[in-house]
Length: 272
Ligand code: UDP
Image 1 (cartoon, rainbow, N blue to C red):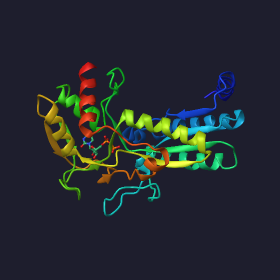
Image 2 (image 1 turned 45 degrees about the horizontal axis):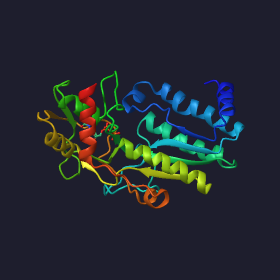
Image 3 (image 1 turned 90 degrees about the vertical axis):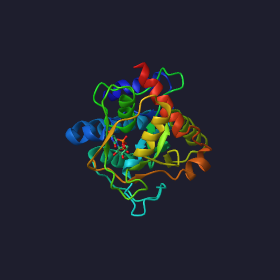
Image 4 (image 1 turned 120 degrees about the horizontal axis):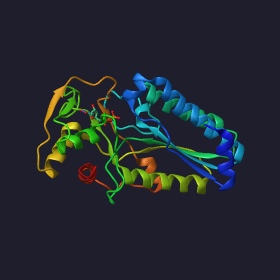
């Protein structure tokens, strides 16, 4: 990244706040090609932080990830003080990024919100913005949408022998527009309060892989074919958020249900 050019842009447009979304996000890709994850998610981040310090940019919002929480034995929800841990280069970059931000901005007048995303899914209600990847999807939602629309033959369910209700992993799926509203609220909070936060953005509830399949079967004319496969390396049995902090501090609350997430994701998939 060209720091001088970034400096010029920040000066020219008098930019005071930065929402940094430019990270790579595939766990699988980070395992096969860790170096691009460290260069992009950390190297480029460093340049952005350097330029912000130099140009007196005051507010920073960063996309972190719930994948930095350590699995709990009782499979309960994570609050922001839960133990941290990483299982792959992707989550390693997020964990280090949080530490770098904290350390570099400690003695500055920059305030930041670190947002720990759970499982974003779904598409914008206009049906003009959604997720599209040229590569084979790894995540549950893009994959199941392709099965629902007949673009892929069946879903592989990675493990049905976890210590959960139906044996499949449970996750906290959050609608993408709820997530984006969380960014606006956290920026407002950061600007108004001159405080730093690390905060969970999730729905606060959870669904198993089988429950997601059931939800799709309710809205789709064709049943989701699936096969049970062995556990996927590095998967946690349970990951879902305690969102008390986001509710109280940001006055933010997710509005969309799992049904709406599935509906919007499927509608989007039919258009691409
Ligand atoms: N999953 C699955 N089949 C797939 C993709 C995902 O069974 O083709 C499961 C995966 O094991 C996990 C959940 O769906 O329990 C969510 O996975 P995803 O990759 O979407 O997000 P992650 O929580 O791993 O970031």
